Image 1 (cartoon, helix red, strand yellow):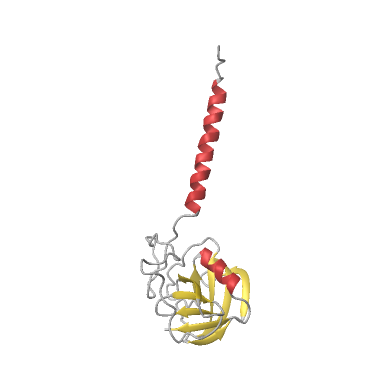
Image 2 (image 1 turned 90 degrees about the horizontal axis):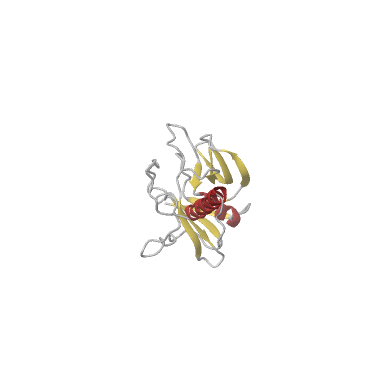
Length: 187
């Protein structure tokens, strides 16, 4: 004859199973889509698109802008709020959308002049993977991502030069760009 399990054993087993299910769902959610940056200098809102920033459109990712330079470089389009990481052969290895600051860099050729692992952003938000490449209107211009992955809030008249990236794109840019890496800013 089979022995009956005590009620505490059933409750413990169900608790373990429920915890495992919650952990599995959390891992799945962590690998899910991320909000995409809005186009053409629009400020993000709480209802940002659920489309991940690195997902190509059905026709593929946007082409690297012409006249963006040669060789290994970071290309930033002020008009489309997009970055391309370009390898030494001139091929784009990654492209993604960004949230611009309120002060845009002028089109031209620059290079990474300073790298800072983490600091408070000009909007007060803790940022990481900070890579500065120029100054415009007295404001330092550079790439960074919020430590918590959030998009920047509206600037409310404050001059900001941070070009904010999604967290995974910030990590990729940090790995790609070192001190002296060329940055090409295009319209």
